[in-house]
Image (cartoon, rainbow, N blue to C red):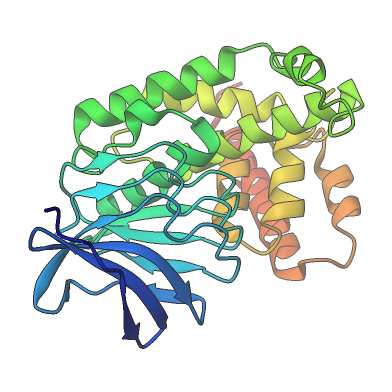
Length: 303
């Protein structure tokens, strides 16, 4: 006679979990987090937590940060799907069985970091891994045990190159055929968002430049410089100003990529208006330093 498996509840500081004992290992069936931060236990009833069931935390709208247990072996389909506020996940660096759409529609997710991460390299790796399920949609790159290794970084960059070279209109026709024309009714709006998505990924990789080769760095910079103020598409500037208005690392990357110069200096400062005065001052200082540097080298000229 088959033994009946009984689901039980386990109280944690951040809410309540439903779990079951499966042959001496614990499967978390579902959870009801009470706050924005969730620290899943390593053990329940002195048994290791090794699995998150399908849809375990589906649509937990308030969840922003999750710490997964070190002994985790499996994450089921859609375990955190539609957690629309989720921003950061701490995950064990080991091979696991990973289901479909674990982070589907988690549009705010920016970082999936190793539990033992310390140092800039591992922090940057976390931001790159965080882009895999949401922005790049490349399941084959969602391998936490390999993230940050040279081979993994190479495959990440290959996928990013492929995405950047795809025609901007790719996917629009498919959406219309699937009956989604109400969501993206205007081709121009679709193309503009597609270019912003490419610019976001360029910024992401340039800012988190662990293992980034110089040739690809130049390619990413060129893309941004071709989508700044004064160009047909201003996607790079839109991402900086509208989405990261007070973050200096974005302005620094913007200027280093060649997106800011004599030809659009006045336009950019005018558009900033009274917003983000510190960043406006940063751009003004950058411009002044560039002029001073140019004057210095002119003085050294033999002409």
